[in-house]
Length: 467
Image (cartoon, rainbow, N blue to C red; front, side, top):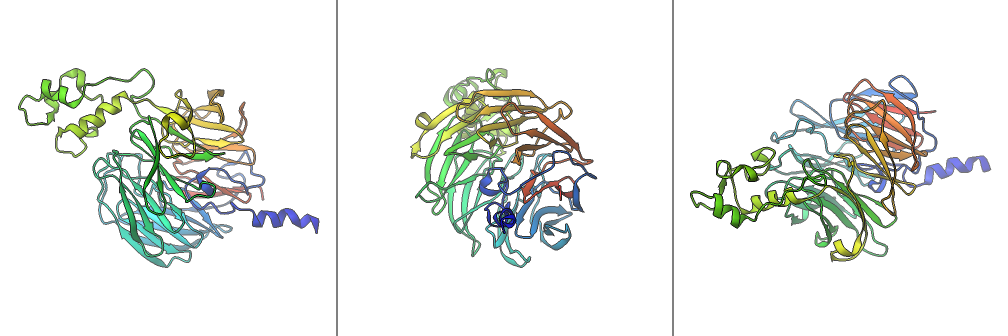
């Protein structure tokens, strides 16, 4: 009977599902994977492959199904695919209510679904939220928007304790909501004093305490009560436009924030609004037109990026956000969890500021933090101290990265924009084990469970494994 024990343990260990963006607890780690290949590709170690409509959301795994979202024409699509067979089991569509403004790298089906094990919750910025049971029966829908975001709302929902949590960071009217997962009704809505952001939050469960949701935003990382939405604690010092998600390991939350123009040494000290208005508001209307600003105060990017209400002028709020943006610094933070109120000075353990990712979330695996920067630069840090262990180019895959790394079987899997999946040894002094080339772009973060890794390209879902 002893030979049955590993099989029994594999069936009962938590983590067999991958129910949200970056899997169980949003960690990007697979505890139930067993052996996974380092070398694979469109025709190697492929257990099955299935053509899927275009989308950039990541696969989630619940029970014997894989769930994906996509779009075709005006249809916003949710699909269930057999985990063992790769066959489409059901497909449901919502009609888009509107067309939200999006960056070319964004997508109408970019947010990843989330499940509580019994239901599936999906979000499309062009529609809102919807819930299905696992057989595809629609349970409820909650229209949301329209939104005022520079590049489009893209954060994925997360689930905890009967609440579906969604961050809607935008240039005006930003908020975070807790939705009753049974009824599809907003249980609480908390304003956020931020501008556009693109980061998915993470759920934190203090020992003996109530669940919290940790959400990055412009210049601040904030924790909220899952049950009521109150602001519990925050950390200052972020950049203005977060894209990476937080990750938690051993009582520490790690968060990376990077924005163009905010690397160390690029900061600009702009004067407060009163001083600028006194010098440049020629018609004394309390607003600043672009032609009124002298060159030294002009934005380096587009006017639209700082004209948050899109009226052609800058008011005091807009100038203040612009001023704060030009003074902020990119950084990877390690913050001890706990406390209340402003914990910046008491809970910030370390900060790292060199060669940071734009979009990919850090992976913390075996006491090592793994980062991948566009251009194909990978960095490993000691998770306790922030000390650099290794930084080198991913030779053979020197391109941009939007998917987040995942860790399993002593390996780190990193998918590049143009379809190269780099596999590293999960060590501080990491080595490249393989570079696996697919024939299509990859923006979705892979999912992994029970001896398989699932890779979504632009038009295909692959199940990769050794069996």
